[in-house]
Length: 213
Image (cartoon, rainbow, N blue to C red; front, side):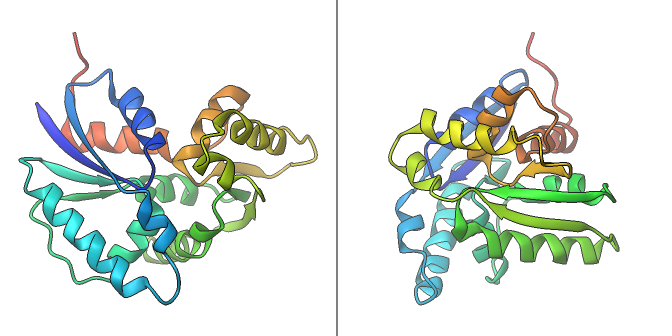
């Protein structure tokens, strides 16, 4: 059985990953540090990068087959490091980027956390350029929402997202950029792109996972 160490910036991401991969023969070991989000400022990037590097070294020493990073800010910082991991690193946004880049129509990428927008969009455009894909996409922020999640008000958080994606005036293709937004997407019943579905397909293919009996 494969064993994956998961690095999260918020404990709410654990349930998403556990539920999505529950049908498969895989063991997940979770590591959470929400404090890093509060220290992430333009002047603290170097210190945070060192911390992320320490965490990844610690996780890779726990007899795992791969490390999954679910926080886009962590991923953006990792890109700035010359970091040689002992095990493969799965970045949650890359399978999602592949999904986004398959579409030529105009798209909207929704965020709730303003701190993740710049890093995610820069990585998306870099990924698209490497794949020689042309994308027409705009980043939209659902304002005053992320603090609700960080304060444990998940129902109010989901409702804000539902109100936003339920706007019939939106004619563009919509995707959500953050794992924390997936629950609202599922509640909406709409066909909306999200990082979780793309991740599951990637992990199942990479490790040739079988379903639990």
